[in-house]
Amino acid sequence: MMRVAIVGASGRMGRMLVRAVHENDNAKLVVATERPNSSLLETDAGELAGIGALGVCLSSGLQEKYAMQIDAIIDFTAPQASLRHAAFAAKHGIAFVLGTTGFDENAMRQLRTLCVNIPTVMAANYSVGVNLSLALAQQAAAILDDDYDIEIHEAHHRFKVDAPSGTALALGKAVADGREVDLDEHLVPARHGITGARKTGDIGFSVTRAGDIVGEHTVLFAGMGERIEIKHIATDRMCFARGAVRAALWLQSQPAQWYGMHEVLAQE
Ligand code: NAD
Image (cartoon, rainbow, N blue to C red; front, side, top):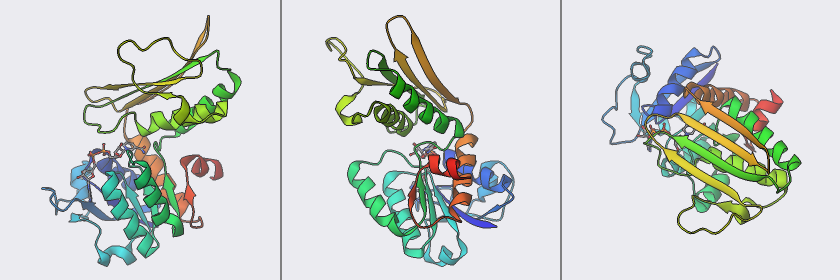
């Protein structure tokens, strides 16, 4: 039985993760945390997740006394908090599943250094469908030459703080890899004003923030006379949460290394 800590357990994803761990016969929630100034500290994590009391109350951050009780930490919080959680996981040799997005280059470097001695999965998106879309987008970009313009659109709820989404950027990387080019050299963020004509080879991004949209991503390949779209729509955050629990279980038998979700899905 894998013993799991969920950090940020009262967040939108945190609550889903509590449910996903609870419904999995091979996993057990042992620790649930929130930020130190949260008004929900000491509330039962199961009550918050809407599945009834589990006897695990939200504690203020990850405390040293928990280290021996935890096999995996699942973290969908915020970049600065995730760096602290990664340091805790590394110090105590605990498997780390990271879903937080919005890291800058410097924070990414710190993360990779911190996690060098623990098994870690980081994915911008834990849904099986998105991971399939990444593979399809890369394949399509490899087949369709740059006579096909590539545009990536994503839509999320009004509370999301980073843009474009980590998944949109991962799709951008997938099509750039398919074309064997560097995404940074071709990425065009949202356009505005007199932009001039589209440059051949541009990979354009556009973003919608509205209401309660869980997450939608479209990769458009538009040629002269035809268009192809690879589209993924998440209608329930449980698809991310179940994927993260799957990754945590998979990590239990993996050596210390940095993995992506494609490796979890490929090796099962
Ligand atoms: P949210 O704001 O609802 O939840 C984040 C939670 O983390 C909050 O409850 C916050 O209080 C808590 N938190 C912040 N600092 C903390 C700390 N030091 N200790 C403990 N808890 C702390 O946000 P959300 O919608 O749940 O998304 C969280 C992150 O997950 C975002 O970066 C989002 O982009 C990402 N996300 C990733 C995937 C994926 O599949 N990889 C899917 C959905 C969301």
